Image (cartoon, rainbow over all chains, first blue to last red; front, side, top):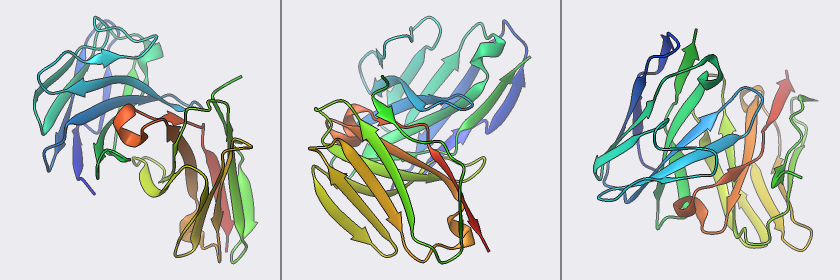
Length: 114
Length: 112
């Protein structure tokens, strides 16, 4: 399985600020994904990040709020912009491996907005 | 109706019992079905994945998919206190490469 490292593991941020989360994979992968896990809710897909193209966002998520970069096949960032307390959540990076059938996750970034 | 329904629990069973965890879904396009285990303050860990209908066994774990009923199950035999975690079902039309739809997760407690 792929080894996925996320930074930071947790952060407490002031409302109105932005936080950039980094995701590093130990092997080259085509598909990287960003999910959100809110308390008591399902993991929800935010966007798919492909190297060399714009990220594809799911319904309810927009680029201005969650800009994503994918500069190469092992790295991606997710920025949570102009944060409000409703953005308090765990943000998870995921990659598809083994022919794209299996999905692996990083440890997550626990974000608290105050 | 949510696409994937999963009872959040908690489900508490004695050590050594057989555990049955279940999810129902509504999207007929789902072909890949996965089970993840998530310990507190950790990321989800892939336990098993199954393509289409049928059973798959891996050690103490058995995954079952019944596409006609849109119902999937995970069985844990000889449950151990270390199995205490939240179990997430996930599914999608193309597996991990298409992004997954998750259930809310079932919080499982194995009592020593």
